[in-house]
Amino acid sequence: MTVQELYESIGGSYDSAKKILQMDMLIGKFILKLLDDTSCQRLLDAAQAGDPVGMFEGAHAMKGVCANLGLNDLSAAASVIAEEFRPGKERTMDQAALYQCLAELKDKYEETVAGIRKYAAEQ
Image 1 (cartoon, one colour):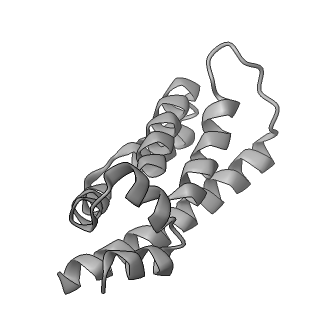
Image 2 (cartoon, one colour):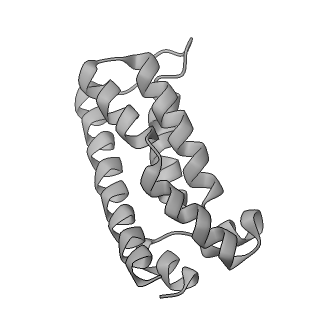
């Protein structure tokens, strides 16, 4: 599987990743690092603990990592949560909507990670 095929399989934007990282070798190297990134787990742990600061920090970190990798859907989902918990900003989502956003983010993250693991196994 090529890096471009990986991006097609996980719904990422190869073109966005290519603009930032420029070479397939670098894209492949950095997409594998997502497997070790803890920002999604930090977000989910903070949500379970009811920690709004931890949720903001985890979501904000995840948003940036995913945006740089061209994982625009994940970045957008993390951005929604980061903005909901941005310090000094009033919350607009009820708990049901928040849980729905978190569930969708988790599902998309798990699909993405599964695709990356498949790619890694073929390298």
